Image (cartoon, rainbow, N blue to C red; front, side, top):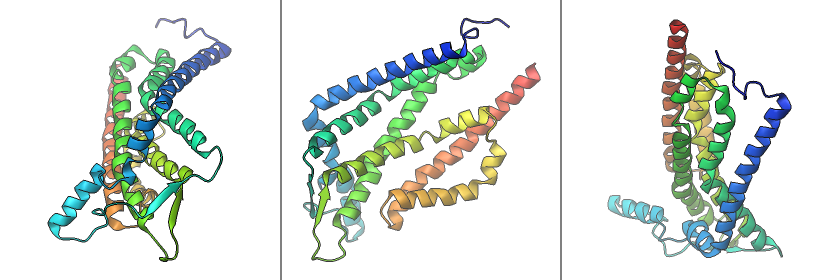
Length: 273
C-alpha cells in the first residue's frame, strides 16, 4: 500500500486545505449571486413572484384537471386576493441581496459539491473513487429535481391555500415581502435537501451508521415522520400532503436499495481480501 502526500499532511495542513476549498466555494456562490443580483427583474418578476400569478403552469394544470373532472377549485381565478408589501426601510434591498445569495448557492451547487469531493476523495481507496465518479452528477441532479419539485409543487400549493385563507372577510391579506420570499425560498431549498436522502443514506451506510435492516425495521416510523413533514411544509389539506409524501416515500425506498448495494459491495470486498 503506497502513501501519498495527502496521507502525510498534518492536521493543520488538512484544515488549511479545507479552508481553501471553502473559500473557492464561497467565491463561486458570491459570483453566481452577483450575476443574479444584476438580473433583478427576471429573478423577482418571473421566478419569485411567478407562483403569485394565476397563469403559473401549476395552477393552469390543476385548473384544467379540476375542470375536467367537474370539481370546484381556487386554481381557476384571475388573481390572488392578497398583495405583497414592504414595511421596512431596507426591506426590499435586503430581500434583493439575500435572494441573490440563495440563487447563487443553487446555481453553484455542483461546483460546491466538486470542492467537497476534492477534499474527501484523497482519503478514499482507488476502487472507492472509481465507484463514486458519478457522485457530483447524481447529487446535483437530485438537488435540482428537489428544488424544482419545491418550486412547482409545494410553493404554489402553499401560496394558493395560505394566500386565499381568511378567518373573516373583515381581515385583508397583506403579505410581508420577507414572509412571501421566505416561503418560496424554504419550499425550494428544503425540497432540494430532502431529495439528497439517497446520497446521505449512501454515506451513512458506508460509515456503518445505518444498515438496510435498520432502515426496513424503522420504515413504519419513517413513514409517520414523512407524513408529519408533509403536513408541516404543505397546506393542511390531504391532497397536498399526499402529493408531497409520495416522492419522499419513493426516495426512502430507493435509499434502502442503495444501502443494500453498499453492504453487498462491502461484503464482496471483505471476501476478496
